[in-house]
Length: 525
Image 1: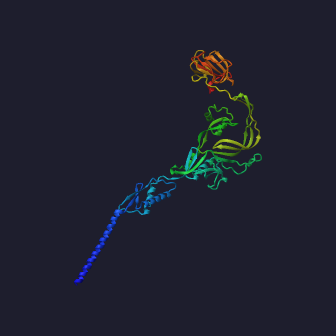
Image 2: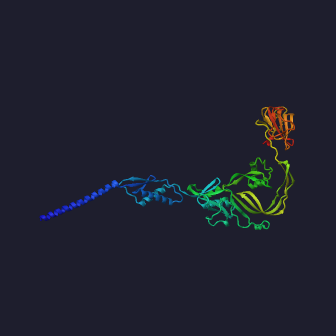
Image 3: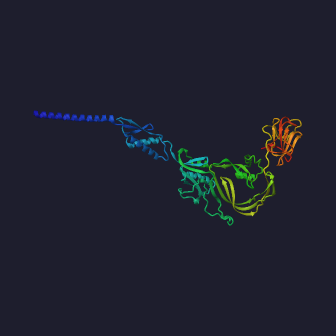
């Protein structure tokens, strides 16, 4: 019994110590593993734009997830997406930090980046016309803009705009051409000749009727040709969404007319009222714009005279041609007989003209709404026109200059109060006050007709000029030419003074036409 009890005690102690050993081992291993985590495990706090979005154990994995997040944000938006954000990894050995699952970290990165996304740049098309530029969202909007400019003058839309890739340019560039609708390409990939929108728009393949044999009914009337007046460039690129222009606004800006200076060349048969109607400007406004050419609305105009006009012109101008049938009166070209012994200011009509009457097919050309040309394609004359025959001089008439340098304008032409006893109350010339001894020049070339004393004038010089006019220079202190001398324009002929009926040193100057004094200021250049 004693032996049995002893065995049981030994067994109990063995089991007890075995369990204790196992428990202590477990505690030791756990503590050992805990100490290993504290001393050797590292985590990285993932930050984007200063905001933490998760943790990762591997920096390379975090950077790859960041790259994938950026790709997802880019794919979710059209155009180019710009992000002002970078990845920052903060190393840590916190044993309590939990690692983020890769998909969870990727989603958090994407949400943070999407919230920091700047305004998108999207594919756009810059349409440049001289100094005008507009950015549109698509090629369809570009075509709509250009088509709207054409349709304003060709509403039947027999011509259409096409855009093709210009393979000859280093940057992505589109070329615009306009063609008759039946000849237009069915595909935008069709390769067209280079030359941009300045290239001539295609002509109909229909043969042109022979004017000698064709009847009026054989001609197709309407718009036959359309072109842009300026070079139009269409460049492909990227623009901020806020920088794009609404299509309707772009059409308005490109086609809105603004008044710009222009010219009109007077044609045979033109009258001022007809020109005013053609260019849509009141006659009084034409006079205001041409003060050197027109005195008033009754002023005479001549063939080939250039008049300044204001032209309503949009940023995108269109030149176009329309074929029309008309029954009209017409003038035969004036027949000019040149006279080499006459000045150009002299003319003589030998035969007065008489208008004819005809039926015509005409090609009328326009720049926007302004007529620019007219070509008769076919005509049948009902009544012949009689041409005007006119003689015209070829010699350019002499010019007139101020007879002194400097001086103070002291008296004009016309009625005045007599400045001194014996002076006229109608001043027949003009005066410049100037010191005695100032050089006096010939206002124009000619022949000295008188050089000496003249009643009232004091010492005076008269010069006859080739155009029949005469100039006079009075109150001189000294005469330097003689009767019969040939003098040139600007040649010194005398010195100024105060002789004769005079109130002080000055030069008195007259111009006579047909023996009658006129206002010199109207003739001095």
